[in-house]
Amino acid sequence: MPIQTESNLIKKFPPYLFARLNAEKLAARHKGEDVIDFGMGNPDNPTPQPVVDKLVEVVRDKKSHRYSTSKGIPAFLKAVSRWYDRKYGVSINPYTEAVSVIGSKEGLAHLGLAVINRGDKVLVPSPTYPIHHYTVVIAGGKLVTVPILDGPEAFLKHLDKAAKTRPKPRMLIINFPHNPTTTCVEPEFFKEIVKWAKKHQVMVVHDLAYADIVFDGYKSPSFLATPGAKEVGVEIFTLSKSYNMAGWRVGFAAGNPKVIASLARIKSYMDYGIFTPIQVAAITALDSPEENLRKLAAVYQERRNIMVDGMNKMGWPVEKPRAAMYLWAKIPQRYAKMSSMDFAMMLLKEAAVAISPGSGFGSLGEGYVRMALVENKDRIRQALRNIKKLFS
Image 1 (cartoon, helix red, strand yellow):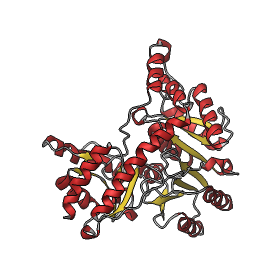
Image 2 (cartoon, rainbow, N blue to C red):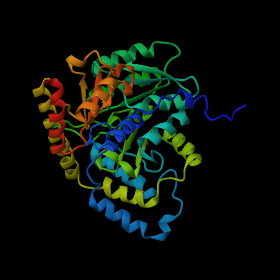
Image 3 (cartoon, rainbow, N blue to C red):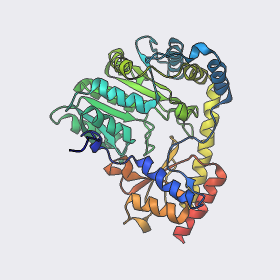
Image 4 (spheres, helix red, strand yellow):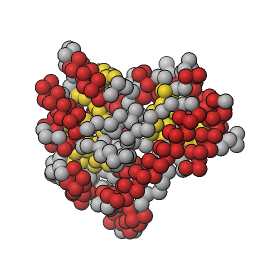
């Protein structure tokens, strides 16, 4: 009898979307092709120099090389508290209402294990970022998808319907500004979410990854700024996008103290925390001037304008998003019979442009593609020239 090499759980996981895309891109590059990569939301700008300088300073202190703490060093958690107070007017107790996470993916995955029981029904938008779905699968919960393509008001109506089914849902995972659809909400939306959660006794987890990538005067609200939000849920934030710290793997969860305690408890068994110099450097980022964030958003806004204007000009209609570092576009009419994966593969092979197929974000993403604005202006213009050949 052969040795067991896979659990029943891992058999439920399809090949990870970005892993497959990376393999295809690597093969193309090995052939000498200059692939312009809009596939993964991997920021191309450098981490701010003061943050890097702080890391270098602290890493030279041999005392910082020891184990950290899974909950986060007190100075980092206090910086989280200051961040919430400054940006949203939200009071966060750094000792009971915040915990560090090794990026939002790790935080979401462990949060699911900490609070979801096997068989618990969890509501998640579709389409959405894969970890929002798979944190439920990892924890053994029952995933129930809620359509989001028709906008926030329709999403709320779908939630009402889902809450009336049995067994009743135990958790809702949301993400605004939304990945991949770029859907944005106003503070009133979160008021409705809190009211709905209290009525149906559902825990809410809000992923605020794109808080600062906003355009045209839009300001993304925090779920925790909503009265009563801490009674029903938590919010997760990663420094990956706002501070160009994707590879650093640092973020935090904040909100309901009982939920935070559960997450901190499971993390105490899973890891020894983020490397202390990274946490100290992250404090420098969180305390940095808001003007730096506005400058970063302006870079993405300029890229958005070039890409959207170019796509519309060639006959590929797409709207300008108000936030997030993505474009979410329907497959062009002339290629509408193709699956999103086949269309993405065609674009890679014939235009040397990598994008993400919508099907990788859930079944309701089929027929769409996502483009991450992580190439510079010149590369974007070259990509548009390459893609235009498919419309001639």
